[in-house]
Image (cartoon, rainbow, N blue to C red; front, side):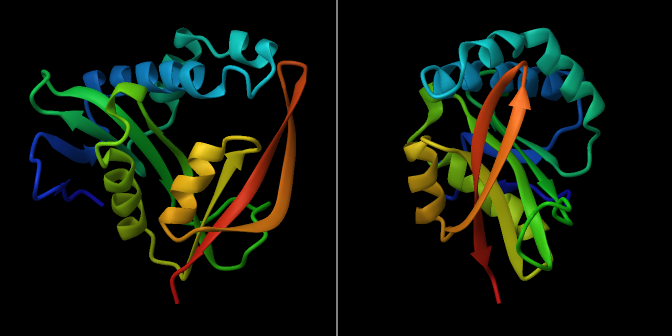
Length: 179
């Protein structure tokens, strides 16, 4: 899991395991900011209001090192431009058997369209040693659904509803068959 992956065309960006306090702070900032950029209008305001930078910092501190990756902008002081989390074994509610799971993948809006999401996804998939990879995407997040479909994922029809901060959200399960 520890090897670095770089795009040949643009070594400006580098994916590596989240290790340093700066990586964790950058992950927290991306988590907080990307939620505001992506989910405003898609998610109830109460959930967005509860998603504070401090809460993202706490999550980044608790999440550990294994399976957490950041993509750095080498030309901008190693700024964290995105992050991803991978689970070698999918959580129990994933409907497809023998799957790993992409638990999170976020890229700041200003860096979208540069191939960073693909870099993070390819890094995560390289770390999964199971025949399937699953993920969940917020219902209505058509940009993300399109990206995941482009990466080879398909909707399974499985829907997960959650209560967060007193409001409901619906996530759609997607899977990539790697057999």
